[in-house]
Image 1 (cartoon, helix red, strand yellow):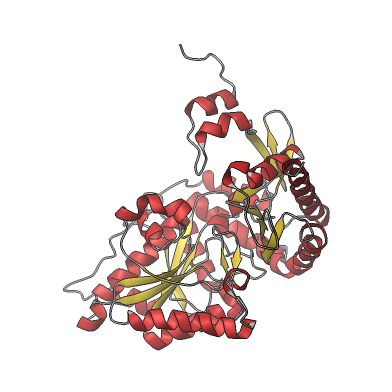
Image 2 (image 1 turned 45 degrees about the vertical axis):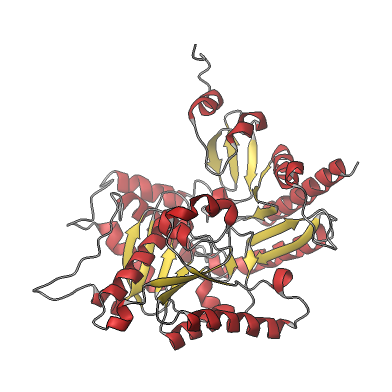
Length: 458
């Protein structure tokens, strides 16, 4: 007999399959059902408020319910909610394409819209592949392979999984994927050993060059998360690595795909992570915060030379055979345009630096000294706290202890939403967190780690 309980929580437990979630444990954790969002807070069906410490999976940029974005969606809904981009165009998508080109690294002049981060990367991979296949040079036509990095994450469609490298997420599907060559993403804490940092950077670039040289006849594209590997646990690259990788791509004739799905739109302290090292990729993949976190949308930007190879001739026009039903959705494009207006009108990037400095100080004072903390990694407002059983030997907790998950549940009990990535605790405040909200986020995080540490060490 079916239950008669029709509360949102009961309906969820009966029918909803959640992503990246051990469903056997789900009901026992008593997750709140969110009904509203206000500023930096999520509010559940019982009226309890939670500080959104992960920007609702890294997508919210300016807070929940920002009037400029919600008003833009309402106005657009009264005009046009959707119209296909196959054979037609629409006003918001056209304006958004121009606005993205205006703020992107110089030379990225063409925009292909899709739905999410995985598809933004998928588009870039297929474009890069077909770009090679359309070459008049037989040697170039053979360079359809990809180089990516260990512990990379580029999404969950099969192409983006192929260039990913996190066994926890990807190993189940290995037999479905195309082969990719892997390089080491430089992280001194884990791999630096006794080398001085400047020598370590040189070693990592030399290792990457060795991969490019070894596969020079078959690999034509490098896929990289600029500055930060997000889903790997906020792994922050050595300064200079991105620029060095760009120089190597130029030397060996590789296209560069910069996956800025997680790091784009201010997360690193600049609009795009590539700006930190003055890098212009051949493909720039954007999603997550592109609409301020209000509607699904993604964009893949590329150069005019890439675009022109797809034109063909009047006698034999070429076609990029890829598309989505909701490509260039007008509602989402209107939200994205409004989000860019918020950046400009509220001087979001200019106002970020004091918040970043406050966050860094608070983490150093309150989180880094804790016994369970092996390392605090940060780039801009992106924070990864690696939790360990033994900070001297960097020994992790046994999986059955579920230490990081218990910290997340303790923080939620204290009114803050956090998210674990394995044994890494992620903090991702949106860009307009107040000083008090940043203080609360770090304080509750520190208190929750200390509380669970005491529990497991009684």
